[in-house]
Length: 434
Ligand code: PA5
Picture 1 (cartoon, rainbow, N blue to C red):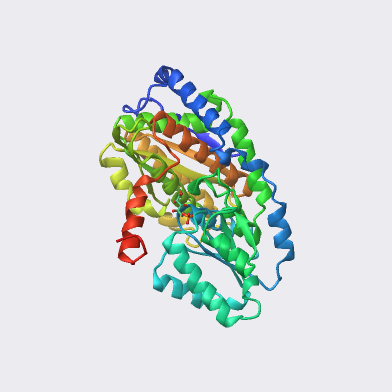
Picture 2: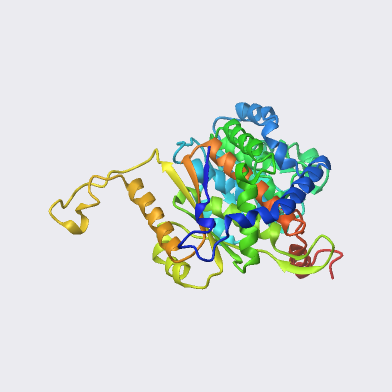
């Protein structure tokens, strides 16, 4: 199970600007209210992500056991919540789990990006997975039409066995395409919002294809959901972290930096960026009053960004709160050879694992930030495996909804994205959008 080290979010000698632990008590009622609202939302069946650990994965495992073994690559077409989780899961686990199959994610409409992917993959051995909850997203529909056309022309006899579609159970244009063309299909459940959907078919199908143990992901998520079931802050890491981030937001720390010390977790920080930004960045509260809230999520990479961003983080404005992601044990490692034992400039590194240097540098950044009075916390993955990743995802989904409740906003909608979608339809000449 992952561990949450939060002591550097609370008051200490160095962290003069941090939150006094005693202050948390003042929020007992707010926490209980937020918890009660979450329970009510669960009863109203709009927070379906909580129940995904109990999901029946047989349709996925059964499908995977029957696909043609020639398929060694999956190309996901999707965007936002229908893409970021796929990338995050695959890149977190591909090396440490030595995954046998590849996953590419095309989550843009950039022609060069598509060209590069098509140049790298072998179409003959690629299964395309179109993912869109609404079935209307312009980016995904453009990708779908390009790829469906390509497959139909190149494989006229069995193109419908080379594409699968993940969309709403009943609604939408793509459900009709599935019926007309006979593409295999999976479901984005009604009661799970796009950016909360990584543990539905949206993220599990590409994961199972790659060779990720999806049962292990759900098991870890289930353990975290259980841990976060009560409103007791000291035993509920999602609520505690949510409350602390909320309090820092109120003190003007409107930037939340997530800094994995593991390249494999960099896309997990990207997944977090969408979850935190789209859920909490809101103009109005639930009563319709203008409040303009949110905390800008930023991703940084340790150690790389120590040589790019950490100067700003330690000496710049006091407007940030930091989250490190770190890994205790790397299965893939190197011992740095003691190539120049006589030279003290480098001999201290000799004979030590590269991962030890990585984790020492993370600790060093934590110390530097703390001494500079910058609140920070650390989420520790014992190793990069499915239960840890599943637990992390569930913790952040719960934390996001809980923080939304403290802010009195709706963390499940995204009205600010609509204007851009409508303008795109107008610019591209969609009927009814003049
Ligand atoms: O969180 C969300 O709802 C969005 O980010 C969506 O995931 C994104 O816009 C893609 O939508 P769809 O799956 O309908 O294509």
